[in-house]
Image 1 (cartoon, rainbow, N blue to C red):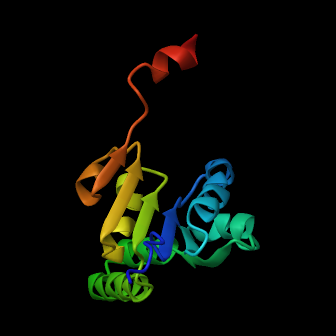
Image 2: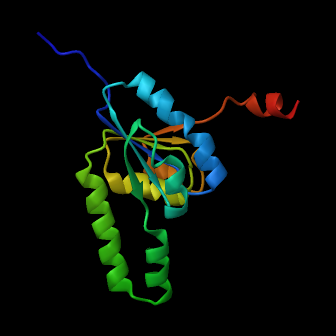
Length: 151
Protein backbone atom coordinates (compact mmCIF):
# COMPACT_ATOMS: atom_id res chain seq x y z
CA UNK A 1 0.00 0.00 0.00
CA UNK A 2 1.36 3.37 -0.99
CA UNK A 3 0.70 6.45 1.08
CA UNK A 4 -0.86 9.39 -0.77
CA UNK A 5 1.43 12.30 -1.59
CA UNK A 6 0.38 15.11 0.72
CA UNK A 7 2.66 17.64 -0.95
CA UNK A 8 5.32 19.62 0.84
CA UNK A 9 5.48 19.21 4.62
CA UNK A 10 7.38 22.43 5.44
CA UNK A 11 6.86 25.58 3.39
CA UNK A 12 8.69 28.88 3.77
CA UNK A 13 7.29 32.13 2.38
CA UNK A 14 9.86 34.87 1.91
CA UNK A 15 8.78 38.50 1.81
CA UNK A 16 11.43 40.49 3.62
CA UNK A 17 10.44 44.13 3.52
CA UNK A 18 8.02 46.86 2.49
CA UNK A 19 5.28 46.68 5.09
CA UNK A 20 2.43 47.14 2.62
CA UNK A 21 3.83 44.43 0.39
CA UNK A 22 4.12 42.05 3.35
CA UNK A 23 0.45 42.69 4.12
CA UNK A 24 -0.51 42.11 0.47
CA UNK A 25 1.55 38.89 0.31
CA UNK A 26 -0.03 37.58 3.52
CA UNK A 27 -2.89 36.23 1.41
CA UNK A 28 -0.46 33.48 0.42
CA UNK A 29 -0.76 32.05 3.93
CA UNK A 30 -4.41 31.10 3.55
CA UNK A 31 -3.97 29.92 -0.04
CA UNK A 32 -1.07 27.65 0.88
CA UNK A 33 -2.81 26.38 4.02
CA UNK A 34 -5.89 25.50 1.96
CA UNK A 35 -3.82 23.81 -0.76
CA UNK A 36 -1.49 21.97 1.65
CA UNK A 37 -3.48 21.48 4.87
CA UNK A 38 -0.87 19.10 6.33
CA UNK A 39 2.07 21.47 5.79
CA UNK A 40 3.74 23.66 8.37
CA UNK A 41 3.95 27.24 7.08
CA UNK A 42 6.74 29.62 8.04
CA UNK A 43 7.54 33.17 6.96
CA UNK A 44 10.92 34.89 6.63
CA UNK A 45 10.94 38.66 6.95
CA UNK A 46 12.86 41.58 8.41
CA UNK A 47 12.19 42.61 12.00
CA UNK A 48 9.95 45.65 11.25
CA UNK A 49 7.43 43.51 9.35
CA UNK A 50 7.29 40.60 11.81
CA UNK A 51 4.49 42.06 14.01
CA UNK A 52 2.21 42.18 10.95
CA UNK A 53 2.21 38.40 10.55
CA UNK A 54 3.50 36.97 13.83
CA UNK A 55 0.04 36.24 15.26
CA UNK A 56 -1.37 34.49 12.20
CA UNK A 57 -2.60 31.13 13.53
CA UNK A 58 -1.77 29.38 10.25
CA UNK A 59 1.95 30.13 10.61
CA UNK A 60 4.14 27.75 12.56
CA UNK A 61 6.93 30.31 12.88
CA UNK A 62 8.13 33.70 11.75
CA UNK A 63 11.85 33.87 11.06
CA UNK A 64 13.80 37.12 11.06
CA UNK A 65 16.47 37.92 8.50
CA UNK A 66 19.16 39.76 10.55
CA UNK A 67 19.81 42.37 7.87
CA UNK A 68 20.64 45.25 10.23
CA UNK A 69 23.20 43.11 12.09
CA UNK A 70 24.82 42.12 8.80
CA UNK A 71 24.89 45.76 7.65
CA UNK A 72 26.57 46.85 10.88
CA UNK A 73 29.23 44.17 10.53
CA UNK A 74 29.76 45.14 6.88
CA UNK A 75 30.14 48.84 7.68
CA UNK A 76 32.55 48.05 10.51
CA UNK A 77 34.53 45.80 8.13
CA UNK A 78 34.22 42.91 10.55
CA UNK A 79 34.34 40.38 7.72
CA UNK A 80 35.01 37.29 9.81
CA UNK A 81 32.08 38.01 12.12
CA UNK A 82 29.85 38.70 9.12
CA UNK A 83 30.83 35.40 7.50
CA UNK A 84 30.13 33.61 10.79
CA UNK A 85 26.72 35.33 11.09
CA UNK A 86 25.77 34.32 7.53
CA UNK A 87 26.83 30.70 8.14
CA UNK A 88 24.86 30.60 11.41
CA UNK A 89 21.75 31.96 9.65
CA UNK A 90 22.17 29.39 6.85
CA UNK A 91 22.42 26.61 9.45
CA UNK A 92 19.26 27.83 11.18
CA UNK A 93 17.36 27.88 7.88
CA UNK A 94 18.62 24.46 6.82
CA UNK A 95 17.72 22.96 10.19
CA UNK A 96 14.07 23.74 9.38
CA UNK A 97 14.18 21.26 6.46
CA UNK A 98 11.89 23.23 4.16
CA UNK A 99 10.50 21.22 1.24
CA UNK A 100 9.26 24.26 -0.63
CA UNK A 101 10.37 27.90 -0.50
CA UNK A 102 8.22 30.56 -2.13
CA UNK A 103 10.08 33.81 -2.76
CA UNK A 104 7.25 36.32 -2.92
CA UNK A 105 9.64 39.26 -3.35
CA UNK A 106 11.71 38.18 -6.32
CA UNK A 107 14.74 40.31 -5.47
CA UNK A 108 18.35 39.26 -5.15
CA UNK A 109 18.26 39.52 -1.35
CA UNK A 110 15.20 37.28 -1.07
CA UNK A 111 16.63 34.90 -3.67
CA UNK A 112 19.81 34.57 -1.64
CA UNK A 113 17.74 33.80 1.46
CA UNK A 114 15.79 31.17 -0.50
CA UNK A 115 19.06 29.65 -1.73
CA UNK A 116 20.50 29.58 1.81
CA UNK A 117 17.66 27.25 2.89
CA UNK A 118 18.98 24.49 0.64
CA UNK A 119 15.34 23.54 -0.08
CA UNK A 120 14.90 21.04 -2.91
CA UNK A 121 12.21 23.25 -4.50
CA UNK A 122 12.56 27.03 -4.62
CA UNK A 123 9.97 29.07 -6.51
CA UNK A 124 10.09 32.81 -7.21
CA UNK A 125 7.28 35.11 -8.15
CA UNK A 126 8.51 37.67 -10.72
CA UNK A 127 12.21 36.86 -10.22
CA UNK A 128 14.51 39.77 -11.05
CA UNK A 129 17.90 41.19 -10.05
CA UNK A 130 19.56 37.84 -10.61
CA UNK A 131 17.36 35.99 -8.15
CA UNK A 132 16.21 33.81 -11.05
CA UNK A 133 19.60 32.09 -10.86
CA UNK A 134 18.96 31.00 -7.25
CA UNK A 135 15.57 29.30 -7.67
CA UNK A 136 14.32 26.22 -9.50
CA UNK A 137 11.08 27.69 -10.84
CA UNK A 138 9.85 31.16 -11.79
CA UNK A 139 6.25 32.32 -11.90
CA UNK A 140 5.70 35.19 -14.31
CA UNK A 141 2.46 36.97 -15.23
CA UNK A 142 1.12 36.24 -18.72
CA UNK A 143 2.55 38.57 -21.37
CA UNK A 144 -0.85 40.19 -21.90
CA UNK A 145 -1.25 41.01 -18.17
CA UNK A 146 0.42 44.42 -18.60
CA UNK A 147 -2.12 45.34 -21.30
CA UNK A 148 -5.05 44.45 -19.01
CA UNK A 149 -3.61 46.39 -16.07
CA UNK A 150 -3.03 49.60 -18.03
CA UNK A 151 -6.47 49.56 -19.69
